[in-house]
Image (cartoon, rainbow, N blue to C red; front, side, top):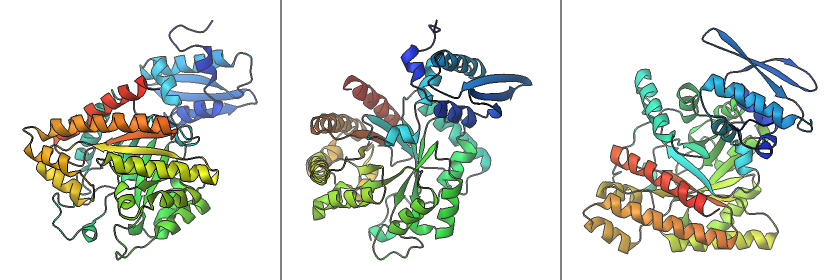
Length: 398
């Protein structure tokens, strides 16, 4: 009989041998002996050796019971519930983006300053993990920041400060994060050899990427966006790569959906939008993209829509500096509000509800991505609260 502490037989059977092996490997287990029927994994914790016997074939009659045994060993070693462990096993870049997944929730963070001391890096990482632990996120997004002074001649409201490499920050300080990580790459600042080296070493079972092009046509680059995708296809075609989509480009040229299709043809498996405040224009862009896919007989990719709170007039100025169109009526409301953070928070929820309903009726796979463009603690905590409410909203509307 399946233990009542873990999900039912169907849930156990749904986890493939590859997912079991990936989870064990990423949690520090070592494969010792392998046979046609399974793999013996070993891990030593505080001097005590633990053994997990991973079944090698899902067609075995007792496969769910064998998965249960592995989960129970992991539960003892990690001090976590079997339900939570089984849920983490279901999250890989392939499971999220391999088939047009719907209702995803991502959270984006910027790594610490590049000149931060190692102790400070570890402290920030732990605070981040503690903040995100209660959220049922599908993936974590790590930004790669570049100087974008060429995008806008106006003074940058928040000064540009070089940050740690997101891949290095993940590898060195976020090892406790068990779910997928989407690493942004501003490809123009990397030599092709640097990009190829990172792609070669990336763990595609846990890491996906979003390639970002130059912030302006006049900015010199080491590697173009087109060439970056070519390098990925040459080096790591198994790495799930996404792209940025921007409503404001659609508003200006009405061709952003065609850009999305071109990127999809280059191998992009998903899209993450720039911060969305202009909901009507975003719905028009999504509609054009969906029907363009339909006309071409191709499946639309998952579009993850970014929500970000605005807790001050300086944050509002920064969003506008980044190119985010904030409707005039909303800008007026934020400028005159006693609490612009509460005003923007409520508007983000309304926007998300509107977009959720629209995407569901359209049949477009979608998700939400929450970020804070400000480093103020109150805005970061509001972003965490927003993610909590969006998860509940998604769960209610599955």
